[in-house]
Image (spheres, one colour):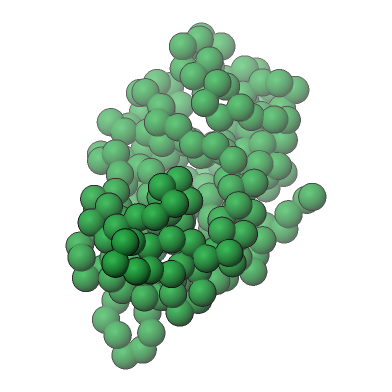
Length: 213
């Protein structure tokens, strides 16, 4: 899995002496997500969904092609077999996402939860995920782990959302966590920022920790 993240990192890195890029790991993953769901995606679709300008999307697609992740024609862009294989492996770990309404664990105007399969072991205090999310442009983040069929804060045993059943049920139905999963809820002032920061944070956590499969 770390090899896949390294390839995505290469896509998001600038090629000297080019200028600083306006997209990151979260945008690359989202672009792959869009192409897999739609089978083919136009440049305008990527611009709209990612909130990026035409030149930025053109550069990102160029980098993805250089790493043999996508092909394109006048009809749009699509994942290569290599790109699809990598995306499906990522989705086996980043196994669920959902917007979350404002609540005790999601205090932002916009909140996006992302589930990282089997990564509860990597959580210490939750501060590390928060700091990564902030570096990715978010206001903050809350980390939950799913243990003994309960959503809990790190080092706690009580069901965190027991007094907020609507949010609790939403998280379970949308994310479908399993024991030992980690859930990162990222907060931001803009919806797209919360989503992209959540994706980028999850990818960095995967990159920094060994898989326990």
